[in-house]
Image 1 (tube, rainbow, N blue to C red):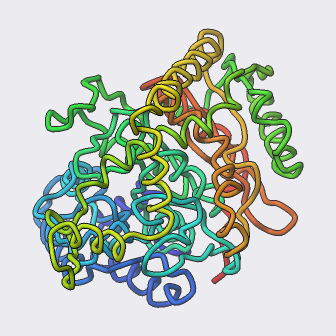
Image 2 (image 1 turned 180 degrees about the horizontal axis):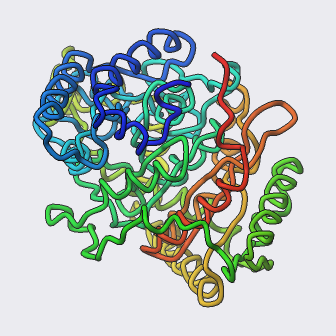
Length: 486
């Protein structure tokens, strides 16, 4: 059994008994990366020197009998839009190819305090814009289950690295489904926390009212551990929520008797692959057998979620990415004759086509004469979508449906059809617009051998119930134990 197949508690027990060292874990991570990275291409950069030094430091700490942190010694991969002090953070963009932050994101400080070990920075769609990790400026990432298929996006590197057994867990970011969709495509567990539960300080902004950092793990228990480590109120993030952090690990009781599950008919009808629908229905039967009540519900404004998202998110992106002009961050075009030309040439040379497309969409939606027709209207529809969820949660504990309408698609299949690509997030985007938590857990495989994910969404700041339901399902199925052969 691989070290990374073991439960976190078992690894910590072996560390305490001296049967294992943190250096063993870090060595295992780099050995697995050496074996598989040519195929998967999950990483943009590795931080081997610092990781080995950190492992040695933690081994010395262990030998002194000091208390262990929650994630003591566990190798982790970090999406490359989460800033890391003195380690280049590119956002998979040529524009930031030389950007070395002078501080850590708060989530990174939390991981460091929990004594996890960062192995490297993971590939993604440029500035988190995309659903396949085909928009990275550096290289594609490949799905470990079938290298001809995409791993999903934009946290494709984060999901692929966990599925390939390269790291124990990873961090991703989720703006419209960018943790849950790649988790579903790669057969691992991805959690998008409630907006404001995890600090966004140090997460390079794409759409500030939607972005969230969250964990990608091989099972639900590990997801609870990582969330426990990174959830916190952060006074330097004005969107951080000052709420009490519950004990997510103790919430994994396995008991869901009497739990009320709503299944939106809008997420199980037209556009959902029949094989995906079949696996979700089978999963709901499992939950019913455990004592849950399952009923069909409606989220009537779901059909407006994707167009609403593709007005709001590009609008915020067009504002956030204005800072990348060659003056403040990253690479600067050196052939310009004046300041304005330098702005134009830096952005023209540094940004990829998908990022430029979204900046133009957002700039148009925010422009004079169109703001009320598009941006203001989209914000009003967003409120209606949030009310739909509130009305369902007045009666039900969780909402369950597919994470994505299909399994992973082939590399290049949708790269020239962005509208079709955008619809892959149709099940996840409403959750981001409402700001609520949701998790994707493996619930089976399609006839082509690709994994299928089930999405469980809950009330704001009720991650404990979301994790409890996901864990109960997981403990009564075998889907999460399957691993790709590489």
